[in-house]
Image 1 (cartoon, rainbow, N blue to C red):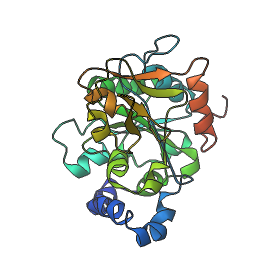
Image 2: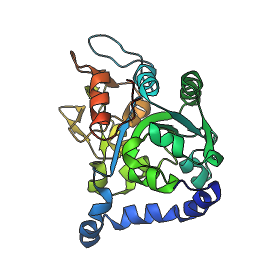
Image 3: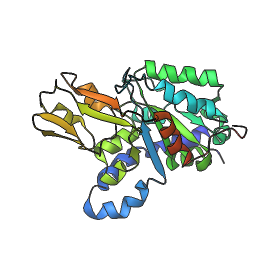
Image 4: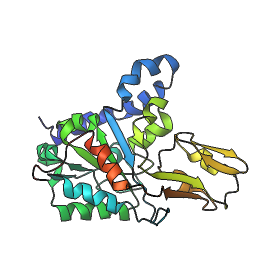
Length: 270
């Protein structure tokens, strides 16, 4: 049964406990006890880069071409009136009224007090608004979202528009245990690498939330733990960090495969 806006607001009062849990879960003993809360089966997030172009064999403008097909495939769409993260954190840097999108049959079960059903064109306009505000889109399939809204987990998908200051997933990457990192996946085919402009200043090491960057041979190197969040690209003082797509990789097909392995958002006639 879907939850009322008042009930969701009451549950959000527990929001500060999330950060406490992340920090406690880094302690050796508690990390084992709390590991079930960080299982990939219950949580998956894929960050979509917002930089205008991602290099590769061809430059690709992201993320709109990746998000639009998800919106169009979905059997239903619902725009939440307010971002749960920014509302709970009292964000002062980005508008809280750019809320998440929920896709799939479960979107029809969300309490109408929480927002509104939307057409494809209305939903795509909302996506564009989030991008223009400088927010980072993230494709999320999280049991927490289903629980707090009271909707079926395996018939929903969320597209969130995140800020680095308030996003609970980004907070988890920075402050949570290594087990949390496993719930965040890099976009298929995306690589992050340093170009010849790199001065080995170490700025990227400081901002990487998962410690995926190290210095070697006078240049930043990125290992397989990278989540493709783009923080290093934005922070590099010389513009040496680049997002690149591996040649021959169908990024959209890879993204859809990951989504459809977890949940069903398609129309019954698709």
